[in-house]
Every structure is written in structure tokens, then in C-alpha cells.
Image (cartoon, rainbow, N blue to C red; front, side, top):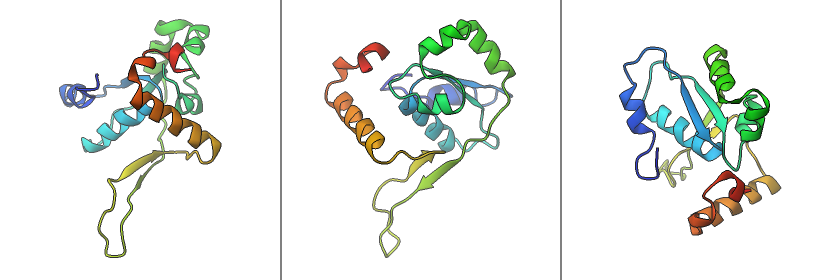
Length: 149
């Protein structure tokens, strides 16, 4: 994946492969990007997704017990152990909501958004928004996990 070529290419390539699983390497934003793309593919049975927590925000990975960062993966046996755990993992259904904002006439005011099983409000949401805005304005300053923190 890259900013110009997203997860659509890989999902299309594996579309006919039975029982494939996806490993997303990144944080909450990357995971959300992949999950949104999976939703748009209209799978009869969407592929399971595991997370290698390599982003700034790894809250979803923590909630799903994949760890809070690359350090936690190393402490739990490294990449080989993680890949084995993914292969053996039970699939957990993630609660996702589609939110649409419409006016009184039913006209869509903004593109629909998906929310994953929890909603941050208050201070955590403010910090996440500020980091997102800084990353958009200065991408050269956010080139790896260490710099993101």
C-alpha cells in the first residue's frame, strides 16, 4: 500500500482466494482505511483482519489484544510468533457503525463515515485530531513510529 495505491489492489488480487486473512501494519488510521475498503468490496464473508501495531494510535490493536506497539510484538516473541498467532486466532466480530449526516430533506451533507466499536470524545479526540492535522501539514516530520510519538 501507498498513499497513491491503497488496499483495493491487494483485496482485488486475493478476492477469489478462499479463507485468506489480512495483516494490517500500522495504526488506527491505517486499519480504518483497510476496513473501509473491505466494506466497499461487498464481500459475502469479509476476510478477517489482524493488526501489527506500528502506528501512532494503536488503540484498536490494544482492544483486540494485538498489543500497543512494535515493542509489545517483540516482547511476545517477535514476528514469527505473531504470524503463528494470526493463523491460530479465533475471529472476533468488530462492531462497526456507518454514520451519515443528512438534512431535513434527506440530502446527504457529508460523505458517510464508519466508526469502529468505540468512539473517542473529549481530550483524546482533540489530541488525535491535532496529530492528524500536523501529519497532513508536515508529512516529512512523521515518517516513522518513533517520530510520530
